[in-house]
Structure formats: structure tokens, C-alpha cells
Length: 278
Image (cartoon, rainbow, N blue to C red; front, side):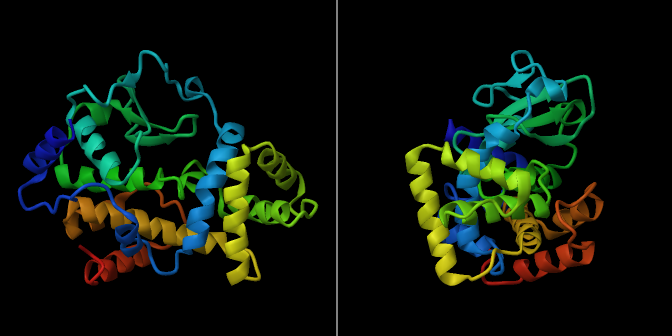
């Protein structure tokens, strides 16, 4: 249960960890997101993700995953990483949590799978055990933060240019314009037109809100950079140790954005020293 997961997390990670008292609610989320990360864009992206995921998603078998034998039951499995995953997904508000798969024959680390429904893949090196609890808390939280609905389309490998096409196409659709982003834009508009009526209405309302405050489409490269900073901030909150967070950022294989290592570290330092860090 949730209480058991919280007790485990606090015992394993350490009594001085600042455990979140439940999931992040909107006011707390707003303190984590960088001020430059447009909140209306944040609200629009989950709707685009829901509509476009079936069109963009691959098959679990494409990643060498057997959906039946490789799936982990996050509610009953006793791996340390699984218990951490339960806590992190609950705290970051991903309920139901993305599916969890394990490849026990390959040291793949942690990977987001571009499948529908969303999923995370654990390699044999992760299943074998957690060597550094706080670093893993940061690493896992950062990845789960990328899987939040507003970040999801960036997390599955879409470039800022591709995200720009998606957003511009949503603007075209709401305004009744012909596609201005080529074939890819036409495909996005086709998917939007086929979406359930409630999804279309919500997206139209949000796009209208965006257009009342901005005359141009957002700079998605800049937005993804801010999302990169946000995921690191979420990681810091749950691991609660700046040194571990910074060490992992220095070694992580690749950032999701063009933000330099210095920019990523500076943002984390400034956030950790701010009143917004709780």
C-alpha cells in the first residue's frame, strides 16, 4: 500500500529525506517549473500527447520486450527499484503509473519506451540492485518527470523542431487554416480532427488562451530546455542531496536538450538556493 511504500522509501533513503506529503498539487508544481517554462504550453502538450500517442508509438516487441513475460507488477514486486518507482510515480502524480518492464538479460539502465500505454524499461544492471540510493532517487525521478503528460512528447524522442510542427499544426487546426507545416502538419491535423469531442473542445479552449497572450508560436527549443531543468528540479526534491544530483547530471549520457552542462548545473544551484525549493 501507499503507507508501506512511504515507510520503505524513508527507511531506505534515510530519515533526513524530506518526504513529499502526497502528490505534487498545482501550486507545488508551479514552484518546480522554471518561470520561463510557459504554463499554457504545459497545459496544451498533454492533450497533444493523448491524441498523437497512438500515431507515434511503437510496439514493445520492437524494443526486445515481451509484454507478457517482461512486465513487472509494480504493486506486488519487491525489488528496491520497484518500490522506489511506486513512490516516485505516486508523488509526481502519474496515476496510473506507466507500465514497467525488465530486460534481465541486458544491462540497459533505465529507458523510456515509446509505446502505448507509456512504459519504462529496466535493464539487468538496475534489477541487480541499487548501489547508490540517492543517486538512483534522482535518476529515477528525473526520468519519471519526463514521463509527465506535459513533457511526454519530448521524452519519446521528438526534436524541438518536431514539437514545433505539432504545436503550429494545433494552431492551424483551431484557426481553420490549411496545414502550414507540410505533410507532418497535415497528419497532426488529421489526428486532431479524429479526436474525441471533449478532447477537441479542451484543446481549442487552451489554444485560444495561448493566442490571447501570444501572437507567435512558442519557441519549443527554449521550452524543452526549461523542461530539462524542471526534470532535474523534481529529481533534486526527491533525492534531497545536491551533490548526488550534480554528479549524475555531469555523467548522464545525454540531455534531452541543447542546454550545456554549465547551464543545467547553474539552474539546479539557483533553484536549490531559492525559496521555491521545499
